[in-house]
Length: 414
Image 1 (spheres, helix red, strand yellow):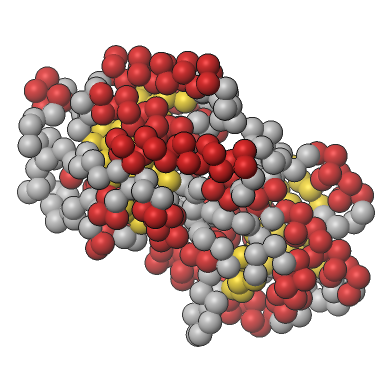
Image 2 (cartoon, rainbow, N blue to C red):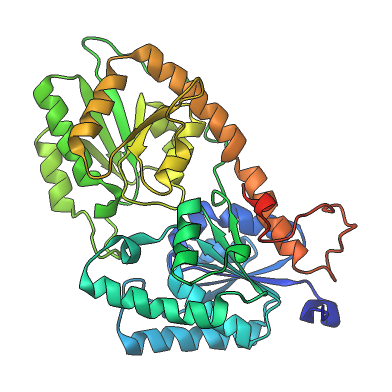
């Protein structure tokens, strides 16, 4: 293998992240990037500008704003985003890139290949609306976007795909966007199981309702409207449940839940909408049940957080969501319901609302699952080991991280 540019220049290896959503990276990937710096990487970030730029730079990251619009399909705007990406890549000359979301995979992946980047990681955090929708306006872009994947990224030995569940891996390979040997399945970067710590469920009784929490981006595909239909059904049945919803409408998504709709649900007594919640662990611990009837996920962060807080989970039997639930046996930690089925969702919620012993047993099983599968410390270490494995001239196999497995091997699935 040829020496990396970092090895030739005698400098720190350069790791570049590209993400279309600065806030999401700050919330859920910042710790990974900081640990990479601790391991000796010089960390760069390409992202549309947002309010966290000063915090990124204070943390020691090199921040590169880009003119990228998440929901744009305007060819001129996309050319601008591609040009910005190429210009930054050519200037930084990263040794490794970690690209998050499909536009980043395309513009960042092709630019990195052209610039001679040693290793390209395409992190697939969920397939989203483009793959969920059957509408004609999404089917054509879906076919178009698969072409450059198949031509330039699929089968390329410099490219590794990091996917969060086996269903997404199978989707990518079936569409010819990736080869199976390029794929590593792991549950994102997990959650901080120290911060999201277990606590006994709140008191509940005849006059104290069972609290059901949901925290997520407020978009259609999270199943929020199905949850409100289920809340109405339970209200009509007289089941004592109180629904609490945290999150903001995501206007960058094609199908947001609008604020007027949220306020209308609240006025009808179906839900308490809190907007953005700073103290997420405490919000979860104030509830008895965590529920997310999503249509598809990578691995849902909100449910991993709820599992770490020892709460039983109710979610859909959908890709990604099912990764957070053991539905049967002595280690069951929640219930799976059919997709887009508010009646079945209401039945599952009523089952746990009326059975505190089952809730508490499932909560204990959730915490155990989080410790075994979703621990951020373990998952971040696995990703950093993949980075280092791809630069053997700088991180030789006999270094303290010896024993690392080859990227893409089945044993690497976590």
